[in-house]
Image (tube, rainbow, N blue to C red; front, side, top):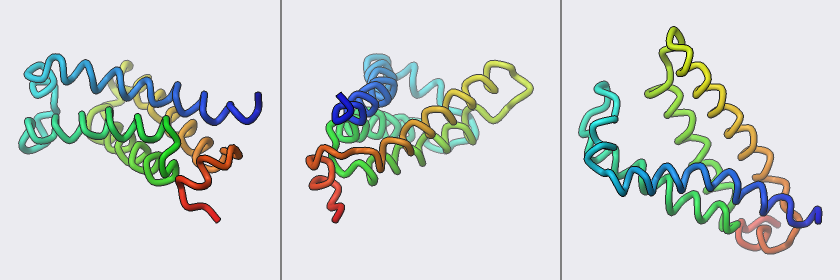
Length: 126
């Protein structure tokens, strides 16, 4: 069972990103409208967000270059805190920022936790 825990962890974490990305894809105009006003070119930002949330998260879940794909998800999640959830006077933003920090913690815990040999090969870990 222990050999499967990193895989299960990655899949559960990636599920958050994939569902969010698919929802944005299914309502693309709504996603563009939800982009923070401080960001230029909201359509391009929405496309980049979907490209990170879906394919990168799926690669991470699969175990492909876990450190790299996990790192991209960590960076993306940090940027989300800074650009979307930084108004801590709004209680929900504080909760969302803390949730994102927990997700970052989960990603960091899984980037070096796999011992299945498959992930080691895919991440080029020697």
